Amino acid sequence: MMIYLDYNATTPCAPEVVEAMQPYFGTVFGNPSSLHPFGAAAEKAVRRAAEQVAKLICAEPEQILFTGSATESNNHAIRNAPPGELLLTTAEHASLYEPARLRGSVRLVPPCPEAVIAAASAGTALAALNLANHETGELLPEPERIARRLRERGIPLHFDATQAVGKLPVDVRLLGCDSMAFSAHKLYGPKGVGVLYLREPERFRPLLTGGGQQRGLRAGTLNVPGIAGLGKAAELVRFPSSAPRDRFEACLACSGIPHRIAGTGHARLPQTCCVLFPGQDGMKLVALLGEAGVAVSSGSACSSGGLSRILLAAGADPVAAAGALRVSFGLHSTVREAETAADIILETIRKHQTPGVIDVGSY
Image (cartoon, rainbow, N blue to C red; front, side, top):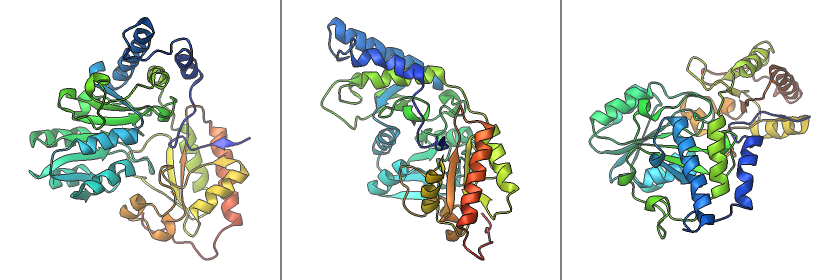
């Protein structure tokens, strides 16, 4: 039986979510913009979902904008920034990094409060930061302090909370951000639905125009089944245990195989382990593990294919970064599965170990 340990890439829809979506594929099929009863029923589902999502992050329903993905939400935030320099850390997801790079002037700093606060200046148009890293699981330290200091300087702040929402408590009132992105499919909801929280929606300039949907903030007919599913997923959120991840890491520690776990010594997501095996080919290892019955990732599922710029920026040796695996557990992952997966991973590495590679570096 396959052991799925790639929950940072995506999660399965909870059965209750699938059930909540079903009516909107058939009997309640109206366009929520229509004024007749079919449209009114669909619009009611959208309003209900906005309430459910808002409650999850301690926001107001009118501050919730539904999008097609967290990537879209991040792009909206970047493109809404006024002219000036964008401030990002070296640990950002590509959905922040790439639109920022294409826009023009970007300053990259280490993911720590001191660096972000020191780099913020009168020329900073927007700071865009992730709350939890998608590869290592590291949490951004003191996001509230960062927000407070940037607010004092009049600098807007956007958080990418894609990996945080559903795994940790997220309260936008405490965070003090101007906008925040996350996605349904990371919290046992459907794919193709994202959220953009807007502290002041009236100041938002739409990226998509040509319709009056969502108070004119994002044109396009709404994905009612997906939005209803997101609402139910938000209502069902339970935070994962760290027990499987901790047992997995303990098994690695007893193995005698050289490795390094990224982010140790820092606060991390409770169910994420990024482990570096020097001398191994992470992409090849993922394929071999799939054949052996364990599904893991070599990094972000959105951008797998090369050495991780995030690990390299954090000081990982390229030889170690090449052997990176991201192992992420879910709500129903067990300690026994963690032990079995560790055994399979270690045995696979023993079969394919590069002779003489023992230096795990300083990362």
